[in-house]
Image 1 (cartoon, rainbow over the protein chains, first blue to last red):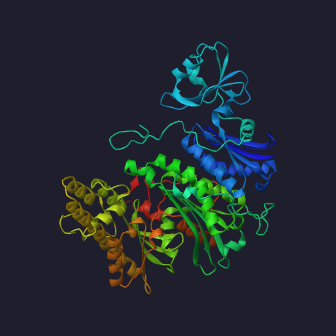
Image 2: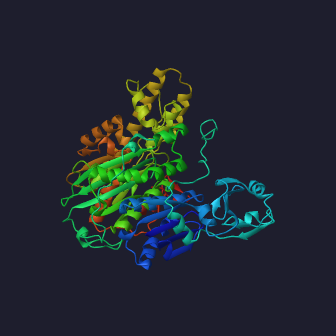
Image 3: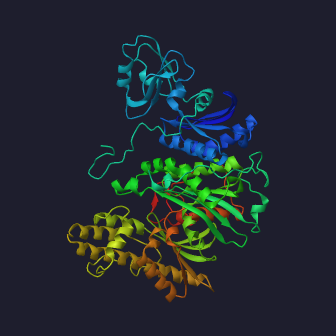
Length: 211
Length: 400
């Protein structure tokens, strides 16, 4: 099975082509913005490098967040539309799970969500032990207090818990690895955006949506 | 869930064998097949529009003789999502676009009875507009272009409106255009695709914005323009005096902010429905009057430059207003211009106009590369917007 997976949610733009989970070609560029401009040319390049025609793809995966709202929409709109044009399925890839993929033990996947918050989720040997959340770092610390074992904090927000979680080993990777994207795409989860935050808009009278 | 979503998106038309894209040459995007560069071929183009609060897709065929046939046109409106806020919320718009884009495209393809393999190109709005939404449609367009090896055309939303009268009528170039919507208000001399010269523009608000905001102060639901038109029926359009901006002033620019403020102030003191109906009628008349007064100036300028047949086109959401149409039609005919306006469904945002602009560009060999940016600001006549900035020229440059 040949899979194309893309990630545009965090501080990199990544495209990877794989066969049965093995990377045929991958390309990743560090960027905070500009994913929209770079994604399509990078996909074209990585497909050429892999020697795969678009007509030969069986599956497309895209990260669904949490992360940059604009970034996740670019990747999802791209992947869903390409899947439609090729009549193949599109799979959603959770960014936090992708960050934790391939790491044993107790893992904290964490992204700086600004406004003194983090997007985070805990995993044990690859399985989620809590749902993804947007909350203050203090809540993350609370969750792990009492769990005496070593914790691996992975992701672009890993430094946020440095010093707060004494038993944490900090692994500040900026984006998920290509292998992780391929592995999670194969699960064929639905490609539904994971924002973890409502839009900032205020209703007349100062109320917020959902209140 | 919106009612159109319940329609099935399943079996997309069977694709022609995906081996290699049989027939027609495999093209590198950014270049186009030779056959597409001449007018001696029929082009089938998918259009995608996501620059404001409508997610739209359409398939259009442009025949050898330049005539357009809309094979399908799907518009998923987000009005219900934005109504509680009284206006378009960019983040809510962007979220709604990504939610429905794929289904809207699938519906347009199925409705046209076309397969992706039969497309000559894909056209997506690249600006100006709410950039979060633009990126959704543009990314979708790029993905289809890449997947099927067909050219991408990054379309200026305003060029789509400019061409919209050509969707269902034979309106040859050149023509004088009044583009008037919730976001834009300008007069352009249109010589052809990519050849627009701006004669005038609003120095503050767009006419549609004035309609919507005054409607809001009258307590009408969003979007207020059409609601205000309904309310105005039977109203006394002479009851409240409203300012006549730029009256008798040279040039073809517009101004609606004074009218908006004055009408809002009057609206605050109104109690009865009859009073509100009269104010709605006054506002509508005042907007129609300014649009036609300024357009008459532009007709003078245009007539001095163009001998022979003179055509006048009004396009954009406000062109759906009957009073505005009537006032403009009256002035056009009185000055020897033929009058053209797209049918109502092509006045408001739609993807058929984007597909048409894309097809006409493709026929001229004008295509875009896969790194085409989404542009929040993108004037049709960029040279004029830079040389002679009016109104909407902000810190980051001219909006439109």
